[in-house]
Length: 493
Image 1 (cartoon, rainbow, N blue to C red):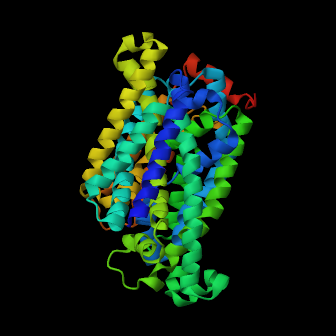
Image 2: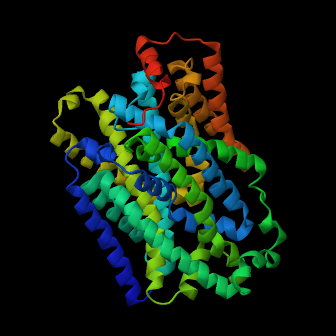
Image 3: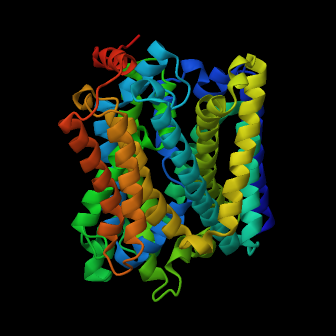
């Protein structure tokens, strides 16, 4: 990178921090900090849901898959997420907004105490918080790799830079800073992505037709929709995982729906995010698909996108593309830090320390900011030690994707009246069963990726639905009251 690139990157970071301090004026209490006071417009919630749904790992781990396996990454990632997010927009998103309007929730796990019981809520809250430490650690490691490619900076420097900037504006401005920075990051990513798309089109030749003709010059397997080990079974497993993740099982995505002003606005936000997932990755990932034509036989495919940016972009634009890559990671880090802080502050600490429930609004806001800091610190520790957990891809796919579904099932299906007979026993059993399945599979290193990723969530599904059908537990009056509330038509006020 040249001096002008550093200037561009520095200006970008400065803008993020300024937005954080501007948003500070809109944060007067914990509700503003965690849910933007329920005043998030649908278009901002939709863009934020999209942008914070993926990270710099797309430019590292997913770029590596695009280099070695081609189109399949768009099918099992982008198309799967677009489809499941659309279904979630219709079925689930309005119910999150309804919970905030009718029950005053501020965190995604807050309603679980009423739907099931305190024990179920605590298991899900603790499990999800711990899993997210590993997930965000993987995202931080990914962006550090990109910074190393561009600048030669040590990995730990990239980790500290990304974590530090996200931490500052999230602690200061809460969810308002988070979503407005998401919007700014999408604008940066849009211009950087279009620039890379046009430059690579010119490089591969054939003009606009190059979008289609590159596949004739790539290995035949690269144009296949499913390319081993990313088989149709793996794609179906990811489809199930994505539904539970993008409908709110990934907690910061639930927050985008919770913070919408009505059920109707939450639904529109989900539909917008779905459309963006279907269309934007086609532009974003084209350079990744074309990379083998530009850098054949690359020793480390995960470096392909960064190497193309360095080779073809003029001074200044290199910094812009790097800023775009940082944008996604910072978006997810800040979103998760804010949401995990909500879960710990609202659902974990009050159970451990009863006096917290008597805290004033100002004191709760201070506690929220302290928890945000501590969570981000732990993700940095994991990022520094990412190699011990299977690297970036291992953390994101093998750990997060395999485990998130097990705790998401009681959260998401618990919102649907059709599963009213699945109570706390079914919820806890499904979580334990999924986690035990995940652990057991670690003793069989030769199994397929589809089995490794899909088995935990399918084990959880069978237990949750099966135990509900058996009606093995009598629901409490509190749970019955909640189910009556959630069964009513989704409010749009």
